[in-house]
Picture 1: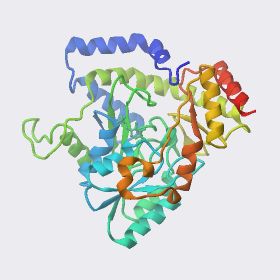
Picture 2: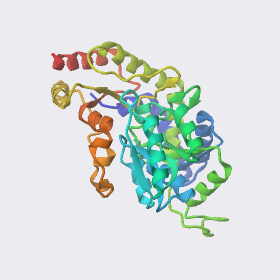
Picture 3: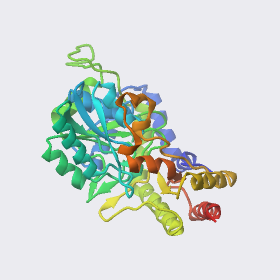
Picture 4: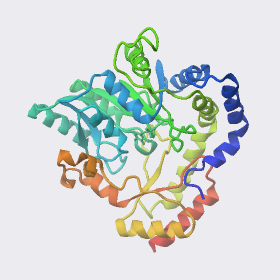
Length: 375
Ligand SMILES: *Cc1c(COP(=O)(O)O)cnc(C)c1O
């Protein structure tokens, strides 16, 4: 059994994907070919924003807006304590200070009340300047932008939405990728919209930010690549990856989102009352980057994992460690006491196979096997 079945997806889309790849090779337009522009337009339209700037990875898609906003030493950037390392890595990479915020049990996302308390504390201390909030649409469910936007406005902060796991999700009729002053997404193969290598994209309604991003993505270009007006980097989406993403975006929009939501609903139905299942409240729509449950404790999680493994069912732990406990952030001197929810969730969370090509019989088999480990 596959954890995220990219082989089944390729089998379904093979004719289109192969033809797309062949076209790019035929044209030998490997960098910045016409399919990159085409994809950017289609992505911007799907998300409902003015600009999409593609780039080399989801990590760069977070790094570049922070560069454009001139984030650096002395700046505080608020990041959930429970996320993939890159969400906070980009902050520290620029010399700014990540301020970690505990999460909610229900959503696994940043806790807006704790966020506001932390902002007020940084303001009162006066040592760092609060600049940006990076909410993460973890496991495919958008963060609570209803509250986060109000907090950002009140404290005059920018929002950089980390939608690496969120592409295809929505809140109150608006698509993930449209909630921040800028948003970054990832096309890493296992993400909700994945290519066949590394890739990413930035979304924004801000014309001057989009222009700035297009410049730093290509060595700080001015008139052209050999007129360099600022210090940039090389971060582009390969034309072949854009070509692969075009039919995949159609599939995601036309049926994959619906199918993956049906799979999650089936899990919820079969696991209800046995384990804590993910909850998607009114107004929210998840793209199910992960289907994550909570067990009673780490011993029960180990037992479940081993039982699943013996039956040939893959499972994963996202995440083993909260951000504040990562060795790379030891210099911040933070303790579990300040992040009780994230610290607890790390000991009990477990993610089960989820993807649009998962059928009901397989889900029933996974759930039966899981339940047998609970008895
Ligand atoms: C995957 C991921 C990233 C980084 O994306 P890459 O394309 O791997 O660089 C950033 N944030 C989150 C939450 C992610 O899951």
